[in-house]
Amino acid sequence: MHLNPQPLKTGRFIACLVLVCGIFFSSCKKNNSNSGGTQPPQNNGGPIELSGSIIGKDGLPLAGAIVKADGQQVTTNDKGTFVLQNVKTATGNVVLVNCSKAGFRTQVRRLVTAGGNNATVQMMLLPSTTTHTINATAGGTATLTGGATVTIPPDAVVKTDGSAYTGAVNLAIAHLDPAAPDFSLQIPGGDLSAIRTDNSNVVLYSYGMLQVEMESTAGEKLQLKTGKSSTIKFPISQFQQTAAPNTIPLWHFDEVSGIWKEEGSATRQGNLYVGTVGHFSSWNVDAPRPIVTVMGCLTDPCRGDLKMRGVNVTIGQVTVQTDKDGNYKALIPSDMPATLHVQPRLNGGRGTKKELPAYPPGGSTTQNVSLPCGPELSGRITACDGTPYAGMVSMYLDGENIGNAYTDETSTFKLFPPKGKTITLKVFDLLGNLTAKDITMPNGDNGKDIGDVKVCPGTELPPTLFIINGSGFNNQPVQIGGGTSGQPFVTIGIYDDRNKETLLTATQGKTQLTLQFAGGATGNFNDVVMILDLNGKRYVSEEMHVSVSRYGQIGQLIEGTFSGEGTIQGGTGKVQITAGKFTIFRIQG
Image (cartoon, rainbow, N blue to C red; front, side, top):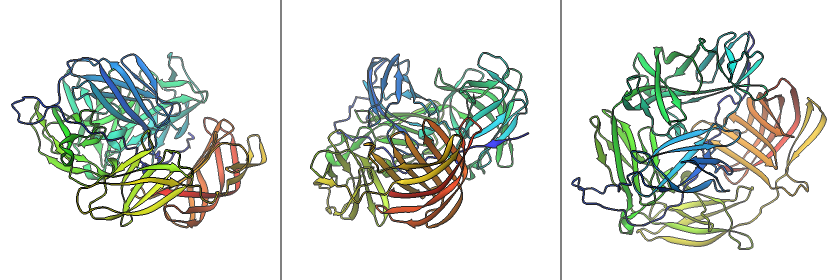
């Protein structure tokens, strides 16, 4: 039995850059509820305006993604945002949102709106990349870094019409770890709503998920044969190992309803959950709990208790966004304490945290959130000639990134630094240009407008170069950047401190090279993950060699050489890459 593992080894495109939605202010709507708090208005199923943003796992906006809801469809713009009007909601103010894009896993979000006439959502699409190839006749076991495994028995693969399939099977497997910083943005369904085998409605607490897709080398969708089963193993995160039960239900995600459905169970073996499944989709090992509803309004007390729109509110394992009225609503498990967290990193530098107690089943609680006061820092990014320019702004205090923002439609940004502190503002245009300046904030709550920040082209970076052989190439030189193609040359270097990895990307037109390796310093690195898109084909490898001769700070360069062997994704052809040389502009981490 031969198993040919293929990238991505980690499955991660580093989530260092986070798209921050614009923040707008207005008064929260109040009613005469006996609760004494501010409660979201009820919409009773009327049409709403649905807006939102779509990002990739790197946190960057995804243009050209298709968003569907209530029979309507729209494509995201170059900022990854969309708006749908007159979207009908179902009972309970629920709307099902479907988002897809070629090369990514389809994401379905069951959005429980706050009850007004609008709703806001942010969705993260994960790459659908072949991780392993097995032979359908022989079967095989695919193992991910961290211990997640999927075992396919012999002669167990069929086409969607049920006919037998023989030959190579490409597996795209992803393990979603509850310990991951962006877990709540990655999970299918979004709110972990589920139905048990007795048809009771519950909400889940997840111990991990596996997403499994099978395709033929020609791109046909494949499934397990009726009567055959696959053994799957989920690693249990270290922080959950003490409380993890010995047996736990298995759940699969139904994309039609946006609901997790109970099907079978898994048994704990050491620090793994092991179960068997008869079909592939997204699978989840979760503890079911009765539902508790958390709702509230997010306000800015420094501006007359005005609303804050488009802010990510994380409660336990669920993240929701405030709507235009500043309201949010989330479903969480009963009998479990949870942390309500507005993360500064995700919200332009302002945030707060509140510990919630374990609530009894079936209840609801109103948790209005007032963000701490602080000065607003605003400005506008322009090109050297003064024309408005889209870009990203990061702020640093004592070398630590404490907030990020993208410009809005007028190229204006807003951040919320701590009062009385001197922060370093770094403005990027994502084409290799950077402006950095130190800003001292007032001691009080007065804001500061720094006006136009010009981002001017620096020294033109050398192109990324290499020579490719094999599979139709004969000592062919490849150049990404420079030349007279007229297409922009984008070069991005990121160090992810959470995962201790470096991601380097050079792109021009439809040609893109990505190198991912452990560490963030000069030196020699083996087992480097490479993805190369060239002439309409993708070449992947986990065995590239990279030698880093220079590893600069943010705004400086990462330089080095690379070489190794790659495989055509979905095929068996090999290519050899030699004399590789890169000069990458470091923008984050």
